[in-house]
Image 1: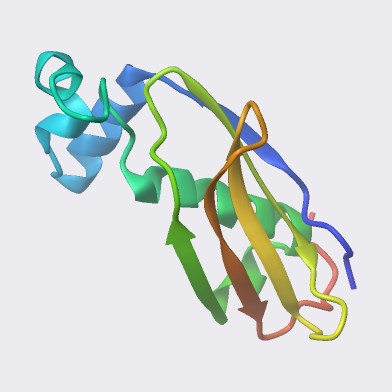
Image 2: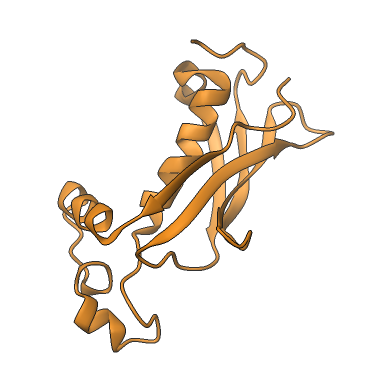
Length: 130
């Protein structure tokens, strides 16, 4: 059993957010309109939450191979927004008394959790596919 998941990092730019908006057809001005977003309590544009969740999938795939993602349970909470220009890192750690269960997170450059939760993989003990 892998004790920790391979960490994956990304600096999320406004261009990344705009591309994600196109992919998802989610053009909420909080994501894509800097003038609008700066006048809100967010103080600027923020990334779509699911854009950050993608890094959790990448961390799991790198740790166990893509096949491990075919059957899983994911329970996460969005805790804080990710502003354009922010660096994020996703990873996780095995829960000692629960085989196949991992605490997962996405953190900003200062180590503050933006997303936290857990994932349970159907076959977490399988070796990673290279």
